[in-house]
Length: 297
Image: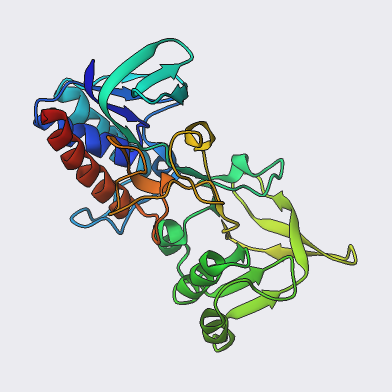
């Protein structure tokens, strides 16, 4: 029996583990792939308070080592289900917890192009606020039509020399206020009714092919491509036990409480307005404090 079982070893999960270990709790961290979560894809982090700049991998390594030095251990197993008694079944074992923290995060939705993974960190990014400053006075493109894409384009317009905003429809889903602000920017060009069909470059991204609804193609020479077509949580396995919204995110009350007693959520897996490194570690610390208190009872 563990005091706290933490599902997910991204920033939220590892922060929760750090707090729980410092409270001398018996914990188990379960991770399907590798520790660090999405942050390991960030080439450089420059917006985390108190740290001038650090790579995503370095940040994840530092946090993991903090947890490891306190005696924390990650078991690399895929969680298959949680039952009413807080038994967690993985592809290898079954574990029981007094409390559970779900910190499975969310993954960026990709375009699905063959070359996409090749250029991650070499011109392709899913986080303008993380990587935008790498493209000062350069030419970039943003793909998407929701608030995230509009916000990214607006943010990048103050950094980059040129910003293309590409959307597959003729109108944006995002707020009109963002669109109106972008229309005032002389360095922003809108490309409607179009999709990115190909990425080009040798060692790094050099250009993209954009195809419109009539199959006409144009090549855009760019230094960076920011993909903002949404995120996908991985919460299907919890849907029979806790409340999840229509997009797959866990519904959280007072930030960390799920609809099931003694099961908490932290980080990008939950419904929230901002999914950033700072909010992930904040969630992790709060979920841990709540779980620690409950485990003491």
